[in-house]
Amino acid sequence: MNEPTNKYSITMPRNIAEAARARSGPSGLSAYVAAAVARQIERDNLDELISVAEAEHGPITEEEIQSLRDRLQDARRQQTQTGTNAA
Image 1 (cartoon, helix red, strand yellow):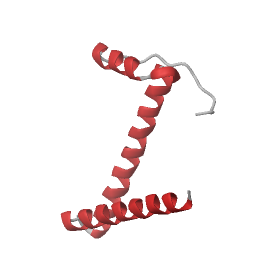
Image 2: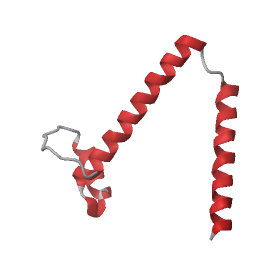
Image 3: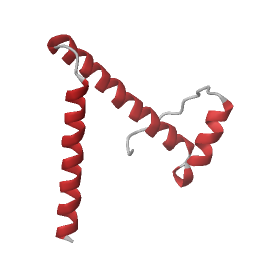
Image 4: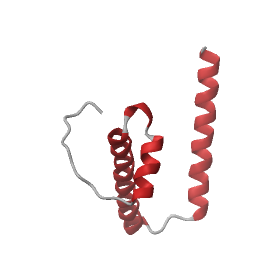
């Protein structure tokens, strides 16, 4: 993250803060927390997109979800094989 930063004060449970500090490594607690918040924002945005799609097209079925998971897994396998063959 090479964007301008501001300093904020946040409050969180001590056990969560200490676990985050222990896992933050050389990048530090601030970078660790910023990455976690960025991931949460991405998830929130995806939830909003899903809600809009479901409102327009109806609920997503378990079969559709599994089909998409299978396609994603196949794409990852192909990408790994392509990367291995290119090396």
